[in-house]
Amino acid sequence: MKGPKRSLDVSKIVNAVMELLDEEPAAAPTLRGVAARLGVRPNTLYTYVPDRVALEGVVVEHLLELAGPAALAGGTPWRERITGYALRLRAELLSRPGVVPFFFSGPMNGPNAVMVGEGLLAAFTEGGLRPDDAARAAYAVIVHVLGSAALAAADLPGPGTSEAETLEARRTALAAGPPLTAATAATAAAWNSPEQAEWGINRLIDGCVRSLR
Amino acid sequence: MKGPKRSLDVSKIVNAVMELLDEEPAAAPTLRGVAARLGVRPNTLYTYVPDRVALEGVVVEHLLELAGPAALAGGTPWRERITGYALRLRAELLSRPGVVPFFFSGPMNGPNAVMVGEGLLAAFTEGGLRPDDAARAAYAVIVHVLGSAALAAADLPGPGTSEAETLEARRTALAAGPPLTAATAATAAAWNSPEQAEWGINRLIDGCVRSLR
DNA sequence: ATAAACTCTGTACGACGTACATTATACGCC
DNA sequence: GGCGTATAATGTACGTCGTACAGAGTTTAT
Image (tube, rainbow over all chains, first blue to last red; front, side, top):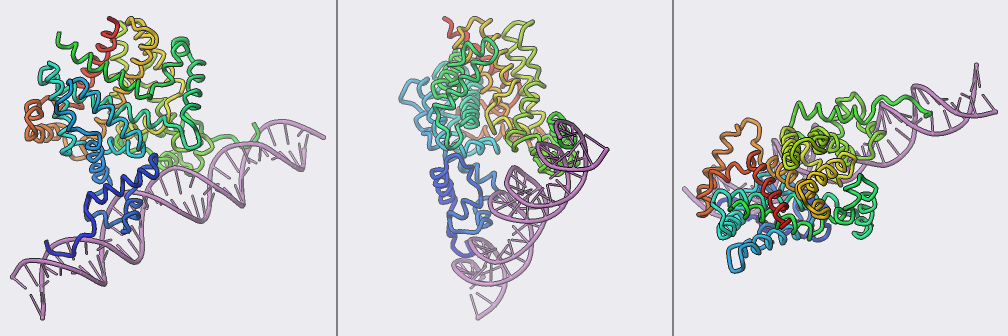
């Protein structure tokens, strides 16, 4: 290559994004913020990435990998592989709520997304689903995990509010609602808990398996 | 009340948002855009709504109603009520992709959200689920619908690109992937189709029902 | 040695959400 | 029935965002 040496590369940029998220997990990282942290002008990033959406795309790829897609390939029972990856990914996202919107800003077609898809396909195939159903099931799992994370992130307590008190606030609000809502207020108030997410994914997998008979 | 007459009200604002979405369904409506359409300065909207997130919240409420939550209450078989509302809501969102992020920008606790929850609870209860499971199932359905809509919106063809050609592009890209992905490329390429969404929701409900035995 | 290719900077633009002071309007009260 | 006061809308402004474009500086190929 001709010109001057590059001072950065995409992985350095991703690292900067992750550092920003470590410091302020709920704040959505911005192009300018990333550039500032790297000691560089905002438009310098355009050398490495065509636009903001693409930057978010590489961050998404990094997070998909952080959740350990390799563990999807085999070793443990197929069902645990699916729920395991799903819940790990969800946890990674919720510990950095600022990154959640990135998953909805463009198509997910990077190599890690493909790898996750292949791993889910393998697991569901091992579970006895026919190929087409396995494909549908794999997508449904992704939908569920990302939907769950996004809704939970939208409901996160702001700074200066404890998790326990928002939960209690939700519970009393629901208890004042219509009959069925009131009757299940305690359960419904914890709708964004990991346990609830796990329940949902398990029911989804149950339904996919049931389609066998 | 004392001061001058109000020139607007919240419903007029919501109407303006919907008009903006009619004209440019993929563009996220902005405070300034809404104000301009109403012939008013941007900060005038602060008389009616505390901030942008709250504005988005009332739009969300309006869309939840547009999908016809009353039909959740009864009349048809319980299962159809659930899938019907879910798919109607999904369709409303996808015909206005610009509004999808609004569903993830704050808690969903308006009256229509409560009404939808109650309707889902009623349907699942009629389906035989115990109250707590019905609550979990209701939330899982919401997660799935919104997740599906958000992922589909993120993958929508840009202007000047037909749906058929993006589908074909996805198919060939997947066909070049790892073995299981390649084998199911045709199915997986249509992952954001309404049929696929329906399949996912039906599997989820199947799984919830199965938890009975 | 020179030209071409490439990186980064400097500067700028328009859009966004929102804050604050100011002006105009209408009701309640004496 | 005029007047004070609460309220609505405006005017103006600030800081942040993504991104465009021209220019300066650096490296390699010839």
